[in-house]
Length: 151
Image (cartoon, rainbow, N blue to C red; front, side):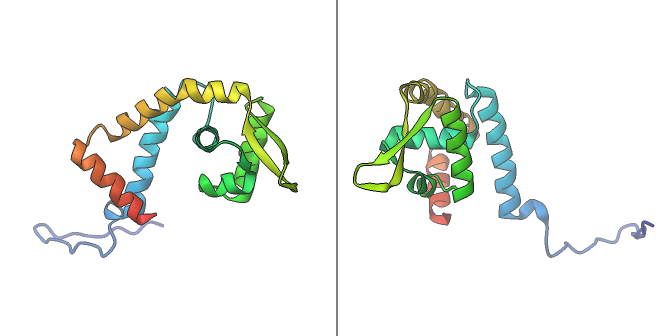
């Protein structure tokens, strides 16, 4: 049963101690939702943000272990494994034994993965620009610097 609270006309209520709209986590979630929507609309292929992170990082660094790729892309072990499994099933990544340590597998881009990374990179840059578009250039730099500080 819902309780109704009577508010006297002209009486100002005290501001609650916790206002959701002012909380950094809530604001970051809203910004992430906006960015995700822009990403889905403009990436130009059927790829998720986590898959793009793995592809773009492999294009940037070259082959590396799945564990290292997870650290470089801020994904836990289970998440990066699922991402690589899906990318491999699509023919975009492959694994091979590390010549320096036979117990370790290296993940690398296939030719198709490299081509996709090159094709999609301009779209990804445009997505970043659109996400940051409401800000002035100095504000963009400041936001990135501040977010970097919070990592």
